[in-house]
Length: 306
Image 1: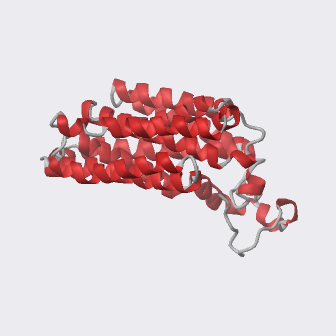
Image 2: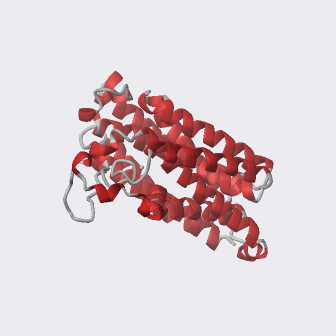
Image 3: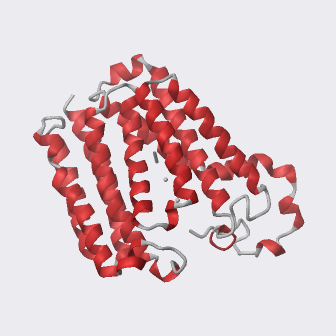
């Protein structure tokens, strides 16, 4: 279920943590520290992705969504706080790197102790797994397995190359699977999750190609097999997403209005696959836009096919 560069402090200048004023480390800014740890925009996006998946799983039946508001709210809140937990876990494990890359985050600026972020993540994950048990069996499986994968990613898989890429891509797809699990309808969102997984795998590998200059301590796929071969693997991921994209229309799950935005998404994925060999930075940005068009295709295809 859904996954995070430099951030300039309010004064507009970067001040090394060791030289920041003592007042920044006072305990009086606790609410702000937790607010920044949460990264609320990311959390809201995670929640909205789940609501979109619920809408698609219910085949655009807005009346049914309105008739079961508690189910929709539960899905939104679980996804919201799962993203919060993932951000807290990331801040704990990346606390040393963040001193240079994200000095405005609560741990490097001295507003929060590392163990507080870890306890926050652990508490939220535990409560969310328990909560999901009372939603549906599928929801429980998805939330519990995603929490374990998040921990495994931060502890080991992040620096492992392709397994780390696949893990993030799987979690991206699980965001949509979770939406379907909340209402116990998985067929349509399974296709959506598959396309998200394939496109995200291509994009994650391209991002690692982009970061090769600073990844001397990480065994990423490009560091292991080189840029060109990695770009080829990424192209396979993008190509597979394009190949499977007509399936919802062919299977009569999506209406005709699904076709135009998904064709635009496919064009962007193909372009990203080509650019991955020469301009990975631009390739991963275009792929991100392509994924947004893919979500739009599912939304419009469901809405018009009601």
